[in-house]
Length: 284
Image (cartoon, helix red, strand yellow):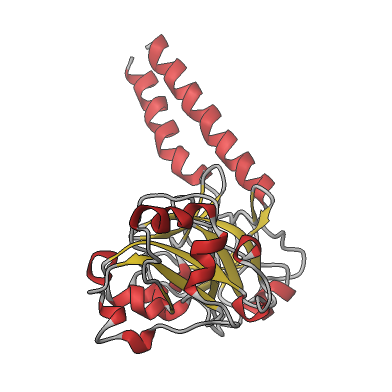
């Protein structure tokens, strides 16, 4: 019994060494590149934990998970969508969109993303002391939303008037909650500079986030065949060259870049070891 226990202890000590330092480069069919990462120590440390890969790729904020529709690495932008947000065709209970201060500094909504505050009361701050925060964009007015959208037409039918609304930027909803704004719902659109003459039914609903890439020498790492990551304790840059080799800047010739398939192999290997340990314990 003592010898079996000794073998089991060795297996349990060996298990952590099977966890390979790998970075998945896909979540479903969505490519994951620097500065983003979905595994610990991958991408840039500033963007750590912002993306979550479950059934799909999601952008995580204090107010919820927002589905990532696309990432444009050349233009350095993400398109995210809130499945609980009202749009021209569906009316849903309102809630606030909240980002952390770090997220706001690193990856804020782009200037061509507009928030529409709907069904506001006449006492709303944006209709009184802060009415300068409201604007029309690309020649559009609030009346268009109430007239063209099935979902928002309900506000007009219930009150027999056209309730006030406000087109505004993210800073308004950043510093004032929907309760303070005294508006019952919001929606958001992006690429609004291209929406002149386009009706609300054809607007692009969602949010575009813009980011900048920190200059950490990642290009040098990528050209050498490595994947850019960081030390989870020190936050210092690492060039992940293979399942066993990391470098501070670049990989030596012949190093193998980590892939999503290798990550799956590592997970499978750990699972097999755990099953073996469980079987071994039953025999004991």
